[in-house]
Image 1 (cartoon, rainbow, N blue to C red):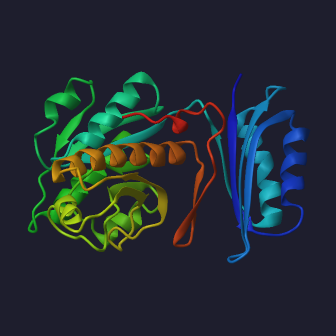
Image 2 (spheres, rainbow, N blue to C red):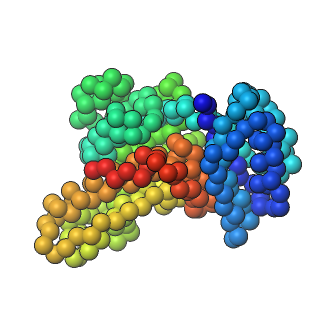
Image 3 (cartoon, rainbow, N blue to C red):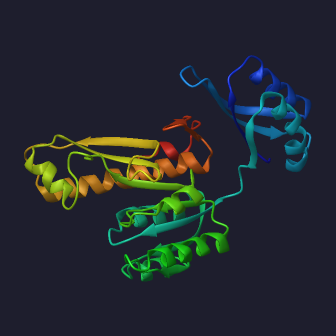
Amino acid sequence: MTNYCLTVTCQSTRGIVAAISAYLAGQGCNITDSSQFDDAETGRFFMRVSFVPETGTSLEALRDGFAKVAQGFDMTYAIHDESEKMKVVIMVSRFGHCLNDLLYRWRIGALPIDIVAVISNHMDYQKVVVNHDIPFHMIRVTKENKPEAEARIMAVVEETGAELIVLARYMQILSDQMCQAMSGRIINIHHSFLPSFKGANPYRQAFERGVKLIGATSHYVTADLDEGPIIEQDTIRVTHAQSPEDYVSLGRDVEAQVLARAIHAHIHRRAFLNGNKTVVFPASPGSFASERMG
């Protein structure tokens, strides 16, 4: 049976949930999962509803009919068919742990996405990508050709119809123009030592300072480098008995897991932008997002 997903954002007021529930019931739909959040600080309301159209109401009819409900509350809303996989472009440089992890999860069905292209500024992972029957694009980036390189990247996004870009350790800073054009549709991953340990070899810097927790942060990309709205984070403990190499290995595992969970939240439309923060609703029971792979 078809499952649909309704996402809603608007100013908080009385009657929103009642109006949504009444509309879906009136269209012969059964709600199977629902999450909501009322932000007292911003006055914004967020809601995600999964439902089944038990009387066969079409997606187009549901969208058209809901427009009247949305107008009354000045809602930003969308209704999606949950069986449709989001088209994703992955970008990577020379660290392949996140890319390989995503390819594995995609291959076994744990991450239900449609990887339409992989873009890199190096050739290191061409064979890996091509062996998965995924188009590979090598787009070299320099200070001199950056506008042209980003134009080529955006051309790939537009030609493939990609709805999301994943920076799987892509070690190039994106321009303000690209960040604005893809606002809320670029996800990045990095270690959580920032701003304490910047630059090269952050894990060695952490080792030399006797750090006891290694973490990773996945966030939406904005013009402020590594400061976009956070989607997912996690940590793992380390001890004095472990080496800098151990720090790197453990850190890569955490990065891969955190990035996969952030992507999972986004593709299932559980992540909402809320100013400089996000609202991320928990995964439903049995979701692959709860798996700890790695």
